[in-house]
Length: 331
Image (cartoon, rainbow, N blue to C red; front, top):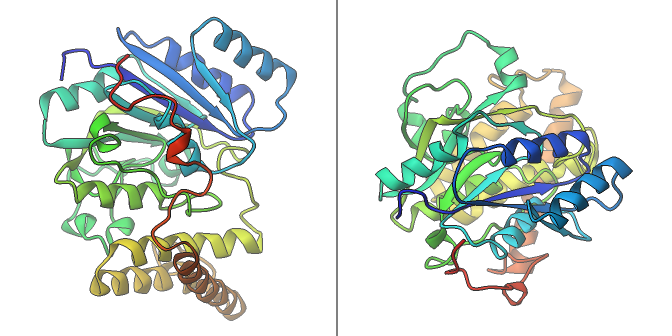
């Protein structure tokens, strides 16, 4: 890989307005010699100011802008990948702030470490930092690499030292192009709603190629965590959201984990999200526990149904035939 590999920055977006424009502006201010910006927009009607900004930056050639009639975060990622040209594919959310040198920090890991297939950047998450502002972790515990329970031990917000990790966070992650080209991986579009665990599923499959996922605290950004838009296509209080949350966890486990690992995942999911024990710290009200257990059971049945209906097919919104250019193309 060259000293300045081309980077394709893909920004999936859904119902964002001002913060989307500020995110794009932040990317365009990066002092890096070779990058492209691909905005995959699933918003049907923007405010006039936002639409004008998107059209103007697209017409000037500063961004590539695509509007889609459906809403799927993993689908938008696949759509962007297949229209990208970079040596490195970098995903960020549509509500982030980037420091100077952000793109170089991602690129440098791939230049220096040929064994790395994915870079997990640090996320200064406004909400999680507010929950425990004094927490600092140098090295993650051994449990953070156990596919059954890692998801309750991996912390890419408070961890300060570079190290191998099991997964990245979807708002700040990058990949070698050959993950999508030579190895043919794509995000599984069966992960629905807020798409929780879609990046975990992808990183578990990536690790089977022999590449590792590397945590790079210098490749950091600020995640604003806007309460509307983004993945919020359904209310977090709705029946659909609750069932989808469990569906996605069970789907990841059924696809990727051994029976022992899956039992640990489902046990921890029950203990934390149904019973409400730490780190979830939910209400222990019997009525709420029973209600959450109902969602848990429905989510499992829904995930089994998804696999029965779809088999190995994971492309719901996009197809390989949509690909407009070869994945070996360069910036």
